Image 1 (tube, helix red, strand yellow):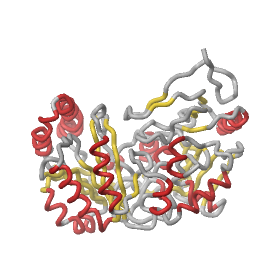
Image 2 (image 1 turned 90 degrees about the horizontal axis):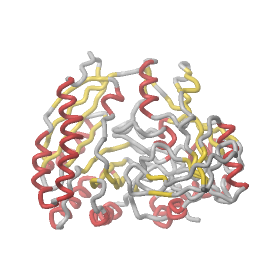
Image 3 (image 1 turned 120 degrees about the vertical axis):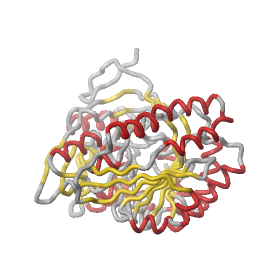
Length: 445
């Protein structure tokens, strides 16, 4: 039996195949490391280099690309969890890299604090989410990575580097969305603010009305998003805005009906039927798009921003200039209508303001996101290929953790600061300890 070396360098006798949450990526690392401290993680990195093995860290396995796959040393950070420190004067929290966003959100709420914005699920680790550019939707508030105020990472030589706007600022600028190419993140300092309330208004709306009023809906709401159901003219919109209260959570039965029964239970069953008999999908889509009712509720941010995702899928998401999103959506709908494709998952649309992170999908431009999904186990390449053709025609930038076929040549044109990132990578990891096939494709060898 082949052995696996632990973080301290001893063999643990464990080896196996790693798979991601979506089931579309697998890898067989030579060994795994589960460090319980930064020193142990640094030792694992040095040990890998001595043995001629590459290194990748994996979070909660929610990326649909092979960004975390390796045949070398796979570092699992789930022992590096919890809040290191909370600074109420600076309004920051420093958290270990393996901490799930769910745990961070709940801990902050107990302290009367919150992140400003977040994505729509909270199963990922803080390092995995930020390293791949996870985002929610916001008119003025940007991605989770844009809320970072400091980073600690283990670099290729096994040293521990701390960075912020004042300390190693060039590393800080890039490593907020570092793709695992600059080192292994061990801790993150986030900006926080006093806990606030959000009022969510969820409402069905015709697709054509949403497109006609998109700029108005975006401008009038702090957080606007919608889901379009292919094969229908229907959407479900969601508007989140800060509220003075009082707190009025979604009713227990209505919340269960919408979030668990309809969005997960019945939706899961419908997708099984659709996968077995694709001809039924348009009818199922029409029924599904009318099943969710309008509702309004007020609650703490993480309970409003996030929702359970129990139906497994594979996803592609592209960021396009916000001004191009309506046209891109019209083209996407026309493509679906003229094709034999049968799409059982809704298309998700969100926005983000421009930020200053070199490899952020919103770097330097106001952005809209279009995400397409397919039920796990269903052939997705034809749909994704056709959608990607539309998105790239609008100067789209793919989410780093979601399916795409773009390469370093494309990204060198799509990101004005791409060369800044790759030059820093050359300096921090000249021997490519953190290289894998995915990084070779998107960043170059």
